Amino acid sequence: MSIIELYTEEEVKFREEVREWVHKNIEPIADQVEKTDRYPREVFHELGKRGYIGSLFPPEYGGTGKGLVYDTIIGEELGKVCASIDMSRNGHILSNIPLIRFGSHELNSKYLRSMARGEKIGALCITEKNVGSDAAGMETTAKKDGNFYNINGEKRFITNGSQADYLTVFAITDPSVHAHIGMSTFIVEADTPGVEVIEDFELMGMRGCRNSHLKFTNVKVPKENLVGKENHGFIQLMDELDTERIVVTAACLGTAERALEIAAGYSAERVQFGKPIKNFEGVNFKIADMAVKIHASRLMLLRTARMIDRGIRVSKESAMTKLYLSEAAFEVSNMALQILGGIGYTKKYPLERFVRDLRIAMIGAGSSEIMRFLIQREVYKELLEKS
Ligand SMILES: Cc1cc2nc3c(=O)[nH]c(=O)nc-3n(C[C@H](O)[C@H](O)[C@H](O)COP(=O)(O)OP(=O)(O)OC[C@H]3O[C@@H](n4cnc5c(N)ncnc54)[C@H](O)[C@@H]3O)c2cc1C
Image (cartoon, rainbow, N blue to C red; front, side, top):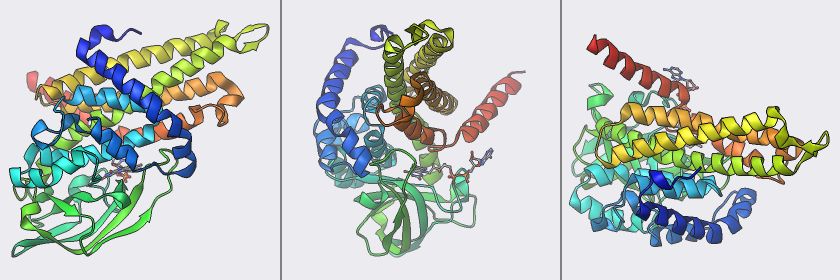
């Protein structure tokens, strides 16, 4: 599909530049990342130096300020080659969103530049052992004590958790009220006494990306490290999640595109019953379905990203985009694997990795069930309020 008509000339040029960089720098290490379950930390520095972390960071704090559409271009190109590096990049970028949108000039000056440059790594800490989908049920607390807050609790499944320098931690500051008005956001330096890594999880996919269980025991955080106002954390969290759902699905699109390319190429060459398998409808109808899903995915992703860049509130569109893209990309990769038959199930091709990598997209950043819940709530509100 030609995508030129959907993007500006500048965006198309930017994509070519990113694609070339990814081809030269990430493609050669993708297998090693998968095998060793690690990526070299210098990758982060390089991403930062090239401005591939800073699209959402204001230029004042070391970013490019190019916006979310540009970030989705980077995510898509990385997703074609190594989705796990993009997942680490995303966890890092997203940990900065509350700061970028709500942080004081002092706090932003202290933390954002080194994060935009990829010299420091960030992690976003929302999920807990007893609290996943129901973030408002959060149990981690931050109690004010003079010039400090004392943080206690645990955070689970944290992307970049054990390798992060700075942790963006959501915690309850007023347990006497609902979390909507009793939650706050803090920047916690990971070497603060009381911050502990309980374990790094071994994941089904996204190998190379660190995922950790962290514990906070009487962690003293200076009151200056409160992001925005006390008890405004839930608003910040909802704002972050609308952006997160777009940031994380860009790589899904890239992975799905690569899966389609591989399947189309293979089906043209593989001969069974005396002809290339692409001549069988059981195969080529799958190619058609895959192309349609990819086309629809791009339109949704691009539209929602442009809306966010224009400052429009997009909770419903963001949830719809995340739901559709995560499921579509998984289906596309699974169909591609099917087209390759037995060889698709081996590590000779990256399709088995694509299927494993993409599975998380239906769980992280709010599961498919939670996306459907959010969408139906908005639809009913719109339709019933109108009538
Ligand atoms: C690889 C990975 C990376 C992650 N990165 C981060 C990160 O960087 N930071 C962070 O804070 N978190 C992160 N997470 C956590 C992720 O966001 C949660 O796993 C996710 O929100 C689901 O929470 P849960 O696992 O506790 O599942 P639960 O909330 O316990 O849900 C279990 C099941 O019940 C379903 N369910 C729950 N409530 C409802 C409902 N009301 N209606 C219908 N179905 C429902 C869910 O859809 C799911 O299928 C990550 C997770 C993984 C696996």
